[in-house]
Length: 229
Image 1 (cartoon, rainbow, N blue to C red):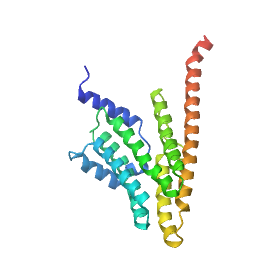
Image 2 (cartoon, one colour):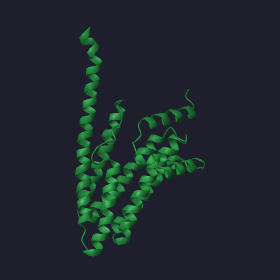
Image 3 (cartoon, rainbow, N blue to C red):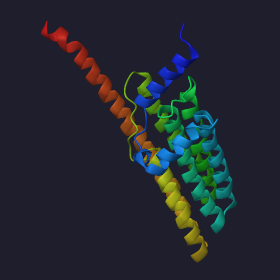
Image 4 (tube, one colour):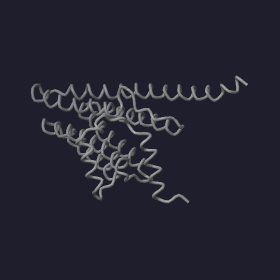
């Protein structure tokens, strides 16, 4: 029977194989912070949950509106990403992964996307657009993890993968703060909602085509020996 320690190691190994490539992971500040967190009682799963908390705070600030609120929301976006970075580093490099780590890695991420993007639509004056952007963002993750469930390497690419969605949102929030201070309009938020929604749909399409292409390649490779015999 597999022990909990063995299960945790197995889960951590799978998590390491299916990690999002993040350049910041090699940054000295990130490595030092992750190493320190490893020595504390804080678990990777708690860090993952904290990312959703930052997103919820950011969503409230986005809805509240105002220069300081939008700047605060932009900061929350970045804090969410820092949590997304550190949970994996503490789990894999720090050896603190758990059998349910994959659940904590994915579910708070979907909550966080929704907590940011739905308020974005309301703040931009088009609630349906925020819901559409959130749904499209969720679909990008669905296609990625579905490919992994089929035995393929997870595809983290695409024009509007998570890091790019959050980068677009951060830029839009800071631009909105300036725009509001100068003209009192909200075109930056509206543009970001459209860009994130359309880019996420394009990412869904490219990832789906990528999964289909790799499945077809596997099928052809598996049947080549039969064709030669």
